[in-house]
Length: 334
Image (cartoon, rainbow, N blue to C red; front, side):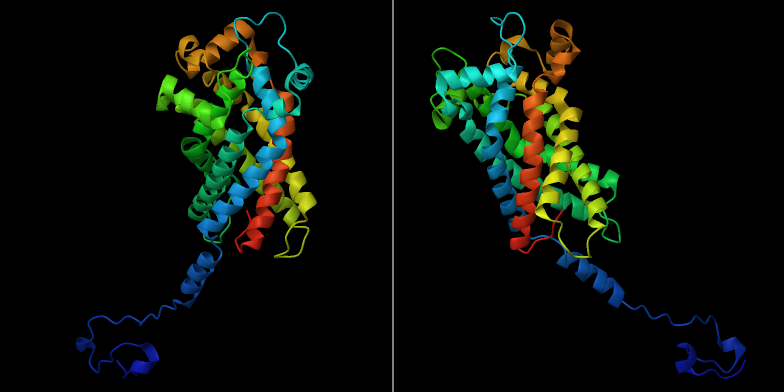
């Protein structure tokens, strides 16, 4: 065996074949690319505080602007034992509310939703960003199914932490405002009364349908938005942000798709959070069965029109405000 130079092959050279037991070339691993990928990934992650603040701000703005449509939608989904004939439509509810209470009546229960909407949007965007960072592939891309999964996780988490308490209180306040002599005068007093009458469990009524609805909402909305955004992003220069008008339109389309996919869950959620739910329904499945049996399958899409208006507007508003807010805070867009 000829003499081998160590610097040529990176192994110890032996003069006799018997001296050589096993020779492997020395492999030098260059960690620069790995370190670059790791640092690149970390620099593209959004500061959690920025995602939380941008989401909360976007959610609060969206909640206030679109609340009248949420109020009308919630009213249209109630059907008490005193109700006879065809349930009133959105236009009738709008006219009767304005005649009785004025514009202020359309904002009954608004504070609960605006506060809750800000909190839940903050939780939603923060958790989606975290789920997304875990689910992206080695190239930093998030596929459609993974985006759906990230949205599902974000929606269920926000349902537990923010949506159920805020929407239960909002629903009960709206339900109570239908009485001739409402017992609740506002958010704080109404919340105290609900807890006094039903305990803390009273503000977590309907948790399961809320988790299902929010999980489905976020899964459909985020995956639709990210898919459409990726499609339109191909028409602009790399690194350039889409115009706000385009972002608004994409968010609006995502809202429309979300409404038709998740409306039955929203109806069940509203019924389970009503004041008479404890005595009328055994659970969410019993609620769904009774609606189907006594009111028909079309009842599951009752309130679609006002919710369609609200979610198409909310989708446009919340994504546009979030994208601009996160940019100002130095974070990464969706």
